[in-house]
Image (cartoon, rainbow, N blue to C red):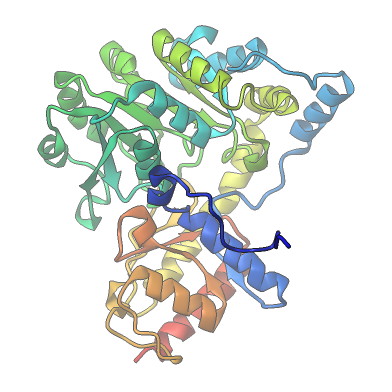
Length: 408
């Protein structure tokens, strides 16, 4: 008799599937949720999403779309009305002129990036990825057939590229630079001067810039978000801007991302999307129009809370022996250095040799969930999200401080 519950299979997965690592952020979030479901009092700092509910007027727009029968397929790259709203947003916020032909709407910014890489990368092309980086960048490049080239930037440069670091990484095979500002995981923001310093090198070598600006609305401490595409017309022509509604409007589950790209690139992405997901969710598209048109007040309200939490988290982290934290200026993450705890042993006998050891022991022994820096290419650090309540920040970092104090 066949055992349909068998864990073995005669089906072999591909070399590509076997080479890809699961998202470590999703892994930590899932484990924390599982512990909570079993009755454990876990305080989680792992999730990369706002803790605020989606604003009511956005939800009402989705309900209205459903009631009006806007539930069928749309063009693969999104409805014209949403594309126009995105163009209007670029014009208002950054002075950038695009037409709906330049816009591709996808199932989240992650999907947009993947489509873009598939549309641009050929076998052997090198893609420069500054480290620390968002966890999915290298594997998405590999999935597209390219070669991820990790370009290390550390605390000495506030985790940002400098002209000398960029120059040293460029080879004849370099095709794309992935630039993320504000940054996940570090929260660092490139200034206009810093981008202007990189610009001549990128122009000289005609490097395509993938500018991931998903956290553009979330900047603090007097910082401004500057898109590299605004620095010159030639840079605009070299740049594809990635954005979406997930972070700024607290719409992570609605799955709407988008890009602004040269028309030939947008057409290539649209063809790819037409054979994979087809259109992004129809009611979500109509809701996103309302978010883009009327969401600024809600963004400002969330930013006030994020900024208060940011300051408190950095203060508390820097008060813990063995931990230091450069002040983040954007997004909703802190990226503290925990290497001062390396070589110590936890109370249950876990030797702390890496960020993964640190996070594993912290979760098991203090019920605090955060993400190991190794998943972002920096093993001396860990990522804390402050997209959670002030109460959780204070209680969670008290647990962290007490736990670090038990390390021997």
